[in-house]
Image 1 (cartoon, rainbow, N blue to C red):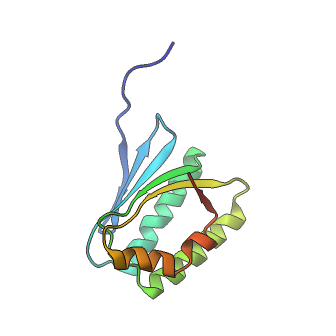
Image 2 (cartoon, rainbow, N blue to C red):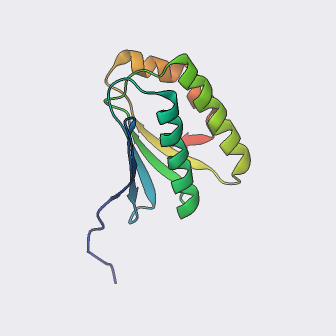
Length: 125
C-alpha cells in the first residue's frame, strides 16, 4: 500500500549563504543559495552541514538551486574543490547531484571556471 500523505521538506540548516532542506520521501537534500556577498566561513559552515546531513541520513542525492547565487570567489572555489576532494576520499559510494544553474552569467562562469565539475565526486543526474 502506498502512503499518499505528502511529506513536507524540513529546514535542516540556514545561514546567510542559503538554506538546506531535507526531503525524507525522496531521500535527498535541497541546497538553496541566496543572493549577495558571502563570508568564506559562512560558506564553509553551509557546505559542511550539507555533507553532515548526507552522511547522517545515508543519502547520496542533492538538488542545488543556484538561481540567485552570486559568483564564487577564487578563494571559495579553492576551498570547495579541496573540501569535496577530501570528502570523496572518505566516501565509498557516489554522490549524485542535479544543478539549477545561476541566472547570473558570471556566477555560472565562476562555477565552470573553477573546474568544480571535473574535481567534484558527484555525477549529474
